Length: 124
Image (cartoon, rainbow, N blue to C red; front, side):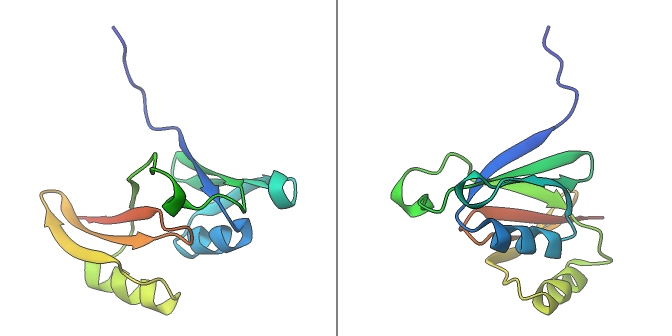
């Protein structure tokens, strides 16, 4: 029987890796390691026990092809969703939709620099 241990990482394409690193670090994600430059650039970002792996491809535009990932969710440390929204405003990240109450907390969505939806969850 297969047994899942935990979520390890998600790999996403960034058209401008520096812009994407700035976006994710503004959300509190830590840069673990980087290598390469230009089209060969890669960055591993730490989010809790998992990672976001960024791969640079300046020619990739998500609007040109079907999206392979709809979104991923980051659980945020904040006293309330209102506090999170204020923090997002302070770092220049716009709320794309929400907030929406869920059984385990309140969530909202933002877009990364390449348009990928990122769900931000504040648990009760």
